[in-house]
Amino acid sequence: MEPRIELIKEKKLIGLQARMSLADYKVADLWKAFMPKRKEIRNTTTNDVLSLSVYDASYFTRFNPSNDFEKWAAVEVTGFDNIPAGLSPLIVPAGLYAIFTYKGSSTDNSIFQYIYSTWIPASSYRLDDRPHFEVLGEQYRNNDAGSEETIYIPIRPK
Image 1 (cartoon, helix red, strand yellow):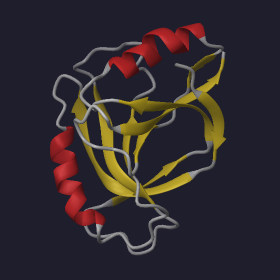
Image 2 (cartoon, one colour; image 1 turned 60 degrees about the vertical axis):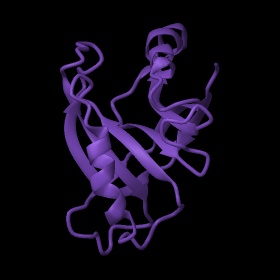
Image 3 (tube, rainbow, N blue to C red; image 1 turned 60 degrees about the horizontal axis):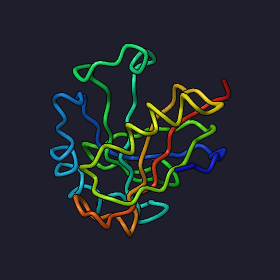
Image 4 (cartoon, rainbow, N blue to C red; image 1 turned 180 degrees about the vertical axis):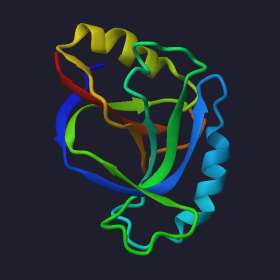
């Protein structure tokens, strides 16, 4: 599976975040808390939601499933006016991304194993220290084998 490589513009997001690890992955709780607040966000750019991860700079070089990171449930917005109570702003800096279209269940992590263990080492890119995210659009169906999502991995030339 080959991604498309694209320079994306800065994104402004409003969402809810929590610290978690892969060993203690409480993403369902995050989404349950975010989705009722989503309708309060007035200046969204699309109907899509984003599942975003912000990793410490050494996260992948010293990988351990118990290392925590910041996980976000968010939407893209045109600006930060009128942020609903309990939600926070986040800016995703412009940069180069490897963009993968994934079809399959969100519980199947093999796509991420492929990206981090196979594709990146064999490519002419390395991970960049910017947020990683998935766009969950109209074709996304949680835990459904027919689901589709778009995965954005921040990269820079080796």
